[in-house]
Every structure is written in structure tokens, then in C-alpha cells.
Amino acid sequence: MEIKIAVTALSALAHEGRLEVFRMLVQAGGDGLPAGEIAKRLGVPPNTLSANLNVLSHAALIGSRREGRSIIYTASYDRMAGLLGFLMEDCCQGASEICVPLAEVVNRAACCAAENKAVQS
Amino acid sequence: MEIKIAVTALSALAHEGRLEVFRMLVQAGGDGLPAGEIAKRLGVPPNTLSANLNVLSHAALIGSRREGRSIIYTASYDRMAGLLGFLMEDCCQGASEICVPLAEVVNRAACCAAENKAVQS
DNA sequence: GCCATACTTCTAATATCGTAGAAATATGGA
DNA sequence: TCCATATTTCTACGATATTAGAAGTATGGC
Image (cartoon, rainbow over all chains, first blue to last red):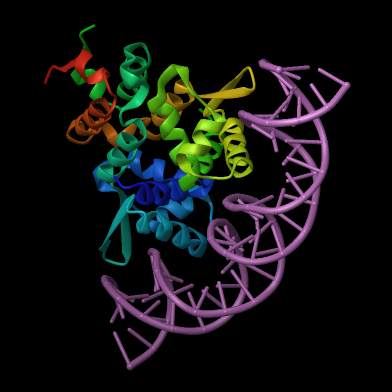
């Protein structure tokens, strides 16, 4: 990932309202959520939410599809993985006492990856 | 991690100059780098760098220690792990086809964790 | 066609951030 | 003590982001 793209993604996430939206969509999985439902859950005016969804979209952190009158937003797990990978790239000069715990935290946070993986010291 | 802390960390990283500094320190490992060396490598005036190091410090993404006339900055891998974990928390409703690739990207990016771990389908 | 629903775009006022010059502080060496 | 080095703090200007009111667009049901 190029650094300017990473900065765009981080800027999009560096806002309490947008971060809440993004996490909500990450937790929602592939089905996503309609804009109205997101606005209702967060209690923000629909135009304000729309502006924020637009920022996340431009950063390619979320995608959308129309379904009837609703527009359904979904997290882009690809872009998310790219961003996390960029931050950890070539980390810590081979110091496994740093990297291993770092990777473990990430594995535990993922809802199911941890169950499918095991550490072999 | 509380959301306001995450926003502070993301805001600190959402700036090309600061993101370069942070990645440089992540890649530098536990020894860290003196402020002057960072400024020299990035070609930024020392007072501008100092302001940016201050932002990263306040977000607890980096720490510092004095060594003679130099101040050595180091990445805080703990805070970094907390932030990445926060972003992935409870992701994707148990959809392992999403989580597993996400965790793998992270594991591969870490310089050495990947070598110490194995996927057990 | 008409109306309600679901969202978005336009706009402008307010607030916050980023930058680097100049001056200040801390350390080490002669 | 005096000077050079390393870095920070003070400052103020210009640039950018955030917000929500009002108006506009798209869809579906009758």
C-alpha cells in the first residue's frame, strides 16, 4: 500500500463518528447495514452520516449497493487488511518477542481466526 | 481500548509525516532512533518534527528517553497492538472466510511472527 | 401521476490542524 | 565559564475539516 492511501484511510477513521460506523460495519460482516439503520443506531442526522459515509467510501474502507430504497454499506475487509499490513510492515527488526505478541493480539481480536489458528512456539 | 483513545491514535497517524515517523520507529525496533536522525532521514525542520513527535507521544504511540544530548524515540508496540485489536474486535460475525485471510495478512506483515506460527486449517 | 420514504448534495459558518521562524532549554566538552 | 549541539516551546498565519439546514434525487406503492 502506498503511504498516501494509508493516510487517507487513517484520516477517514480518525473521527469518532466515522470510526463507530466503520466498526459497526466490520462487526456486521458481509451483509452490511442500510444507511438509515446506521443513522438510527448512532443517533446522527442522515445528512451528517451521509457526509461521513462518503469520506469512508472515498478511502475505500467501505462499499455500497442499492437495495430498493435503501443503500446498504459494507466494510471492505481487503482495504482493512492492507492498512493493518502496512502499519506492521517489516516491524521490529526481527525481534520475535515484539512481533509474536503483536500478532497474537490481532489473532485474538478476530472473531474466528484465532480458533482456526494455533501458535507453534 | 476506549474509542476516544483510538481516535487520538488514528488522528496522530493520519498525517504523512507522522506516519512515516511511526513506521520508521516500528521498523527500528526496541532501540529506537534519536530525533535528529529522524529529521535528517525525512528532511524536515527539527521544530516541525518535534511538533509531530509530540502528537505521536500524546497518543502514546511512541515513547522517548534521553541519552546524552539526544532524545531517543521508540514505537509503543503495546499501543499499536491495542489499536489494531480494537479495529478488528468482534469482526465479521464469525465468517471465517473473512477473518482468516485478514489475520494472515497481518501475520505475514510482521517480520518474524509468521515464521513462528502455522495455520492449522 | 402522486406521495412517502430513503438518501444525498449544496452551502456557509465554525472549529481545528499544520507549519516553520525565532527564541528558549538541556547537555557535554574545552 | 563559554560555546556548540540537540531538541523543544512559543507564536501566528493559512489551510482543512466538520456540521447541519435546506433543497434535490431515486425508488416503490397506490
